[in-house]
Amino acid sequence: MNELVFRGKDLFRPSKSHLAGALAFLVLMVSVGMVRSGPVFVAWSLGTVVVLFVPVFYSAWRSWSRVGPEGVTICWGFGAGRTYSWAEIRWVDVRTTASSGPYAGSGPTRAARIFTTSGRRRSLPGLSWSPLYPTADFDVNVQRLRNWWESSTEEAQRVEPVKQFRDRLTPTTIAIVAVVLIMVVGWFVIASRY
Image (cartoon, rainbow, N blue to C red; front, side):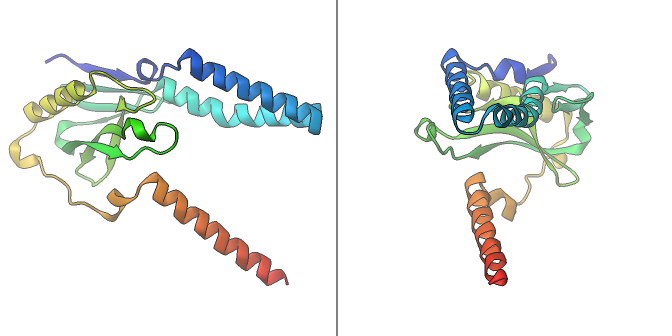
């Protein structure tokens, strides 16, 4: 079988409409900031945006995963990556997360992941599907990953992990719990001052 390589830069290709929207937001942010707060505020705001978002975009753009005879290598954009040998991988599946926001009607987000013998779950960068970045051959590539895994491991090694509490947590659930927790803590802080 051929070695498989999935790269973030092949997956995350912003369209012209997305770039136009980002540019419009940037122009709006600068113009409102100049009118209301002045150039110092605008400079600090732009600096903060750059400091926060450039590493995220760099990591997404440079991330990759490789599937080959030695196992699965995962790199999130920094360093050489980490290789999980086939002996360390006990299960391969697809995590499906319900979408929210403007693309909620288009379908859920799906990402291929591996389960290691230590109990950790690792998503494979570059091997995902979302309404924003649909990949036509996602299911084919997941099947190719499974073929590598099945041909490189014994049947006794392949053990489907038991569902855990964290498998039921979605980003929406985590956000709701965080907002409620912040509100409760804020209420206690405000109440303790009076």
